[in-house]
Image 1 (cartoon, rainbow, N blue to C red):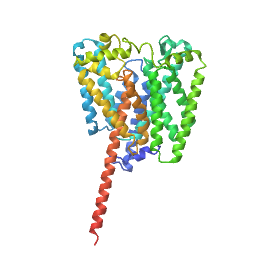
Image 2 (cartoon, rainbow, N blue to C red; image 1 turned 180 degrees about the horizontal axis):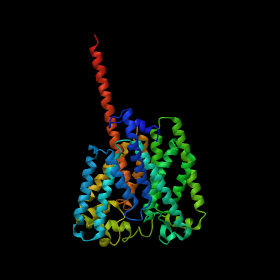
Image 3 (spheres, one colour; image 1 turned 90 degrees about the vertical axis):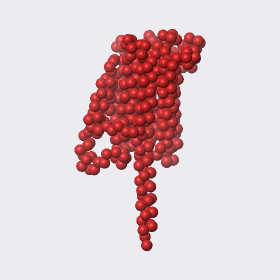
Image 4 (cartoon, rainbow, N blue to C red; image 1 turned 135 degrees about the vertical axis):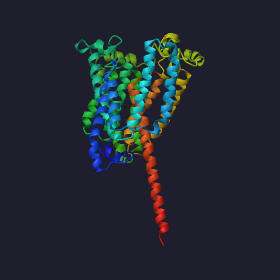
Length: 439
């Protein structure tokens, strides 16, 4: 991300600000960026409810509303789909209104949808500055989560039970589940990789060290999905940067840094394997198929057997009722969409994902002042969309952060491109009129 980003950004459609107005507004921008930084920085502490993230979201929303947050027409489509999605959950909840957990499940879905809309809207102004604030906070959160993961996995100071699950074999860090910790660490790792890859990191060695440290936390989660997320995200990020690079020297740099990065990952793995506990777990978890995956009672068997039942149930099974009906959780966000939100919610979720995939892949190839910041966001997000076939991702806070950033960056990019096209058309019309007016 270029340090000149905010200056470029001020040329985008939005409030007109002169030199005097800029001096007046800068303190507001600093407060806005700080609250966004604090929002993602607090996201690592997820095993208490309400978490600090929820508190900081309320503060961030209030600050943005007080200092300027516009409702934009670009949110109309996703707002409509999200309303249909949550309405499906509310209808499916009706038989379970007297049960606390189903009610909270639907309430959380509604809350996360609000956070997504918030992230869309904040991208319309000071885009690069706000993304960078969110990024810096997220990296700090990832470092804290990784510290807790290491402390837990190696049972430092007897804190193993607090920061691990499954008899200390998998690190959870400050999360409730290792399968959430792992994916949570992917996006900050990709942000750091992107900084180093395109050469805009102020301290490249420090960034590489922090990246390596976060990869340790990713490894100790022993989440196969998270490992696949990281590899897939890195490949997408490297590939996109190579394709859109305009200079041969940048492409050479990308290839060189990629080779160094692969060597560094191999080095981290080699060091990790010297610990017997890590080596044993890595051997176990590296298998593509686990005992709980296969068979009629495995996750894939349950998903397959649930489909005929869901086709006969317009309202699904009800929020959190899949395990009651089938004996275990669905571990598939798309199946869960129909099970917990009914046909209305399930179809809405599929539509939401389809629209997001189209918008995201289109976004990364738009030549705009924000193209550089879109790449790590989409590279991190797309593999976790795909991961939804393997795990329930609908209540991951960071998933909805990436969702909101993707749509927000798409909205501001579309608006900027329309503005540029209108400016060129006006200039062409003016030039034509001047030529015709000559004697």
